[in-house]
Image 1 (cartoon, rainbow, N blue to C red):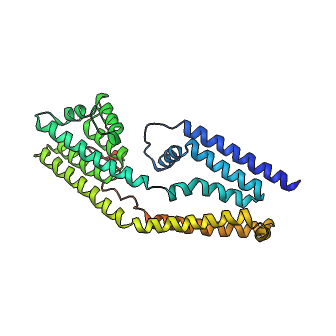
Image 2: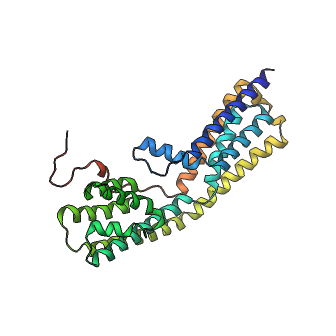
Image 3: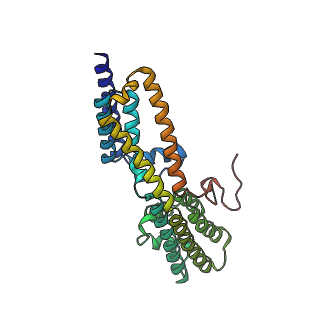
Length: 294
C-alpha cells in the first residue's frame, strides 16, 4: 500500500509539472526580456515544447511504474529533458552563426542606405522591412522606439541590450558614435564591421569543426551509458534489488548525480560557449553631454 501511494504521488506530481510546463510553453512571449532572471525564464519557455514535455513525462512514468523508485523517476525525467539536446545537433551554434550573418547583412544594408545620402535614422527605418530574419524582431523594436519619439542614442542602447551579442555591440558602438559625435566615413566603418562579423563566423565554424570529434566521442559515451542502464532495468532486475531500500535510493541519487555532472562536463567541453560581450549595460548609459543620475 505504501509503495502504491508513493507511486501515485510521484505520478501526480509529474502530471502537475507537465501541466505547468505546457502552460508555460503556450504562454511564450515574442519580446526577449532584459534582466537575467527573465532571460532564463524566457529560454525555459522556449524549450518547453510539447514533445519535450511529453517525452519527459512518459520516461518518468515508465520508470516509476517499472521500478517504483522515487530517485529513479526523477533521474529518468531529467535524462529525458536534457539528453536529447546533448545527443542532438548543436542548434545554439547554428543559431549563433545565423545571427552573426544577419548582423553583417543588416550592417551592409545600413551602409548602402547611408551611402545613398540618407540620414542614420532614416536608414534604420528603411531597413526594417527587409532586415534578415534572425534580427528582424530586434530591428522592428528599434524602429518602433524611433517612431514613438525616443532619441536615437537611447533606442540604439536598448537595441544592443535586446541583441546581447558581441558583433551587435560593435555595430551599435559605431552607430552611437555617428549619432552622438557625428562620426565621419560611417559607411566605410560599417563595411569593415560587416567584413569582421563574417570573418568571425568563419572562425567559429573552423573551431566547431575541430571540436566535432570531441562531440562525437561524448555522444558515444553518453549513449552507451544510457543503453547499459536501460538494459539493466529491462533484463537484470535482480541485480538492482539493493536499490529498493531507502539507503539504496540515496546511493542511486548520489550515483545519478555523479553521472549527470559527468555528462554535463562532456557536453560543455564538446560545444562552443557563449562569448563575452564587448559592451555591457548600454541601456543604462547616459547620452553624450548628459550626466548620469544618481
